[in-house]
Structure formats: structure tokens, C-alpha cells
Length: 333
Image (cartoon, rainbow, N blue to C red; front, side, top):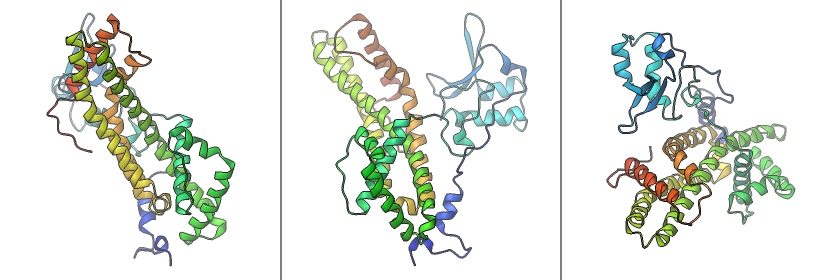
């Protein structure tokens, strides 16, 4: 009897038990709908403090903005912990792991509700994920592939010859799972679910690739600014500070590839694997959100020297020193 069909004492496989804990569809959205009138203040928003990275409630007071910790908000406005507002406020710190800011009325991130991602990926990311899965199935059948880049994997997903071989792999995998041919569709469903989850890893892989290219740009800029010692030193320091976290992101993506690269085994343990992929997705997404402004600022930048570029070097140095100090201990989360 195939391992995947051996039932536990409750009559369900361990795979089914894990898979049942992973919803197939997103749950209905819940929102940060507060009752207290303070949350209706102009431009009210929850963010992380730039210095402490602790969640704060920020409101517009005309010429300036005022910020209070969530604990201070509860104490000052007498919001009881067991009230509806109090319970919503308890969710703010975790919610800010998945989104950069929360305005009253915003949806609670779906990561906190059903585990699905609250952000979107492009069609190309899904195609690339399908291509990687196809490559894994072909390898399982003893047929290698030369695909290495995201574009090559995406092309595999639409290649008729590859599709034909993948269909054959579906049949064999169904047999491995103890399913009759007329239930091969269950394998297809599992592959679709896996591709959907891995598409977020592909999006993050692309983002981390942008970070790596940005660090390479900083290295090239050092040569251009060699006669301006202060800027050249700042660029060297930026490279030193940013290279370590980017290498950690790359390592985490490599770990996901290693964990899910054997597609057949991944499908046979789909529930646990989806949980694993989502943990990696959430950690990577939370860590890389802070890079958004820097990546946008440097998009399309060349190695030509100019005053605006020098100002961006200064802003990037402050970003690197704030978030990635030399003595920061890195953990995979």
C-alpha cells in the first residue's frame, strides 16, 4: 500500500489532516471598524515608529502629527481590553507584520484570518511557479530540464510538449497516491494549490533579485565617486550593511526551493508543505516591505553622478544604518 494512503487510527491520513487546516478559499474579510471617535480623527493611521519600530497610533493635528503607543491610547481614552475596540487594538501589532500601515476601516490582513496572503502577485509569478513544479515532476520521472531563470520556467508552463509530459506525471503520481485514473483531477488540484502558494515565493524572489542588483549598482558607483571620499565611503558602508540581510533572504528562498523542489514528495505532504511555504512567505514579506521606498527611489538609476543621486546615497545610508546595524543578530523567523 502506498505510504500516502496509510490511514491513521482516526481513518484519515496525516496529509489530509494537515491539508484540512489550510483553507482552499479565502475567508470573508474582517475590518478594523472602531467605535471610539478618536479613530475618526483626520488621517488617523497605525504605523511602526521610525526609531523604535513599535506600533503607534498617529493622527493629524494641523501643522504636525501626534503619535501614541497603543497602550497609551487605551489608557488615555479608557478603552477596556475586553471591549470590541480593545480586541481590535490587540491585533494591530501582528497586522503590521504584513502591511506597512493600517487606517481605521481597513481590512484585517488575511494572514491573520485564514493564512492566505493579503497582497497580490503577477500572472508571470504564477506561471514561473507552474514551471518550477513541472521541472520537479519531470525530474521525478527521470527527465531533466535546462531551465534556470524565471523566464525559462515561465516558458515551460506554456510549452505543449512539457504539458504532455506533466499530464503523464499526474497519472503516475495519482497511482503513487493510491488514486484511480478517474481521480487524477485531485492531483491537478493539489498542483494548482501548490503553484498558487509558490507564486508568492516567486514574487519575493524577484524582489530580492532587485535588491541584489541594487547592491551591485552601489559597488559600481564606488568607482565613480572615488574622488569624493565621503560619498565613496558611504557607498562602501551601504554595501557592507545591506549585503548581509540580502544574503539571508536569498538563503531562505534557497531553503524553500530545497524543501519543495521534489514536487512529488511535496504533493504527497501538501498540507505541511503549504504551512511551511506560508511561514517563509510571511517572514520574507515582512522583512522586505521596508525596502519598498529604497527600491522605488533607485529604480532606473544609472552610474552617472549627479546631486540628486548623492542625496539618495545619504538617504540609503540612513536606511541601512537604521534597519541593519552591524551587530544585528539574524534569525530565520
